[in-house]
Length: 364
Ligand SMILES: NC(=O)c1ccc[n+]([C@@H]2O[C@H](COP(=O)([O-])OP(=O)(O)OC[C@H]3O[C@@H](n4cnc5c(N)ncnc54)[C@H](O)[C@@H]3O)[C@@H](O)[C@H]2O)c1
View (cartoon, rainbow, N blue to C red):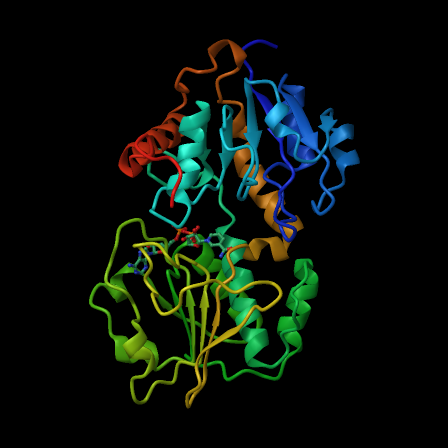
């Protein structure tokens, strides 16, 4: 049907990325309204390809999106493969490219080289500036759960995907926790923060909840007096860091584990510039200080992938109605009329200008 978008759901190149931004039940809703959807084969996706076929989608080999018709929106979640260099399509995914992150300039340069655009899901917001679709709740839930399991010596690596029933079973199976005030969640009023607090409560803890009001004049000694910190803030402009490397050596530190759900390492917005690189499913925990007490870090940037089915269902439910608002082939190339999509396209244009990629698209 003219006027409706054509979507191409790509395979995720990261082997641990099992989520999908669009589940078959919601794809069926779009197909019923006339949207054409092609779904790439993907060995690790938490949903079988056959379910998409039954929902009315076409299929294509994994990684074939560069050959998709030019008016298709390429839908994904995480990073693109390094090739092809030039990107002529409009892509919808989390580019992590608007806050000066490592690799941001190179990615933006690929879009300018090909004439395409990034409609970044992180910047798809409603009129109040709230994210339309986000994985935050499950990121916080899993980030806090891993921390609890590590503290109990019950975290097995490499990490593997599971469902919530299994994870909650592990959280409830531990030794009785000291419920009082040892676990601090910063950003507690947000999506991730709520998820983190729910996981801690499932594990029998009573989290201390900080948000903007509590960090306005930050009490670092109070922060360092908690055993566990789960950081879940969303910061879009540089702020005074919550911790610096010198704080980790402060006498009297009780803090022995940081689970940094925010994972802004390398960005100027990082509130925890006490480490340089993320941890992984293979090695989820890194020791930052020998102590006493020892201080460990968990900083995994695809936490919701550990609960892929729950995370995908929640995200897709919020995203699919928005996909109907993308301009279809007839209007493709114009800015979308819909405010949410035109806002994210504007952010892309601003990021390209700010990064001055036209001058030198490839980073050194
Ligand atoms: N590691 C992962 O796998 C993963 C997955 C999804 C999201 N995230 C990240 O988690 C972060 C939070 O996402 P969200 O969806 O929960 O965002 P959100 O907007 O729902 O919540 C963020 C919260 O942080 C608070 N906040 C902002 N600045 C603060 C400050 N200086 N001090 C205290 N609180 C502050 C806000 O008031 C808000 O309550 C984002 O950076 C997001 O990119 C990580």
